[in-house]
Image 1 (cartoon, helix red, strand yellow):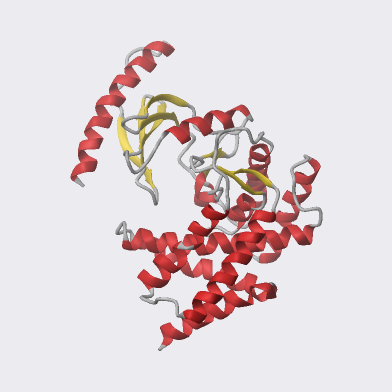
Image 2 (spheres, rainbow, N blue to C red):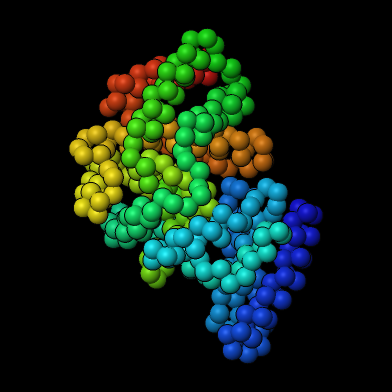
Length: 339
């Protein structure tokens, strides 16, 4: 894309200047010949590059304003680093242009390496990072998961998936079912104890690193429901685990959180119910986001993972009769699609 190509030229000039200052300040000598390669891109407008030269490696974030704002990333990184969480160190920043120079936490995400054999060990490390995050005092000027935000997220499902992807507009009965289900999910979320919430604490955003894990993509953090991040960790967009194993991991987390004084539900069954309902809220949101990324941003590949989220939802519907309205709604959408 031409605009991105121009940005990349500006980024390279800025990067050369910053590296020259950094190498000089650190006493590393002259900046060596190096390569700059695409490290990753994500579902937002951000993209990342990896600079490598003579045994040194850095990551450069390109977050184009006005679509992206680097300041929350910078502020929250500083806050998380104080609690010992392994987040990128920021060597240089140009917030006006959306450029950041970061240390390199490695090139393997949890998603790249996790399997049935190593999952227990990797998730044990991930939970230590999450517990550290949740013990941070809630005194930063961050938004809260309030009624407005929860409802705005849920409405992505009818707006982008139902209307744009399926080409369906809710009839009166479907709208009533949606309203009842949405209210139940929102009430459950608001009733939970509040902690700092990463909002995307999943294997794709955890790096195999030392100390493990490196934590990325925290710039949208808010204060909100205690079950949000741990549910996100185990009910991921890109891989699924047997329910019995998930419940075992959730119980480990719940016990550790309680022992550390993190406000979790007093009974594990209540915690599990809250996690189930929190998961459904997130799954509906993500289905809407994936449809939006396809239809608004021209990135259809994310829609391939939508069936995984419907599977998560169906599993919860089977054990949570209070979500019968949502079950009826989804059944009616399937019946409409089959005609």
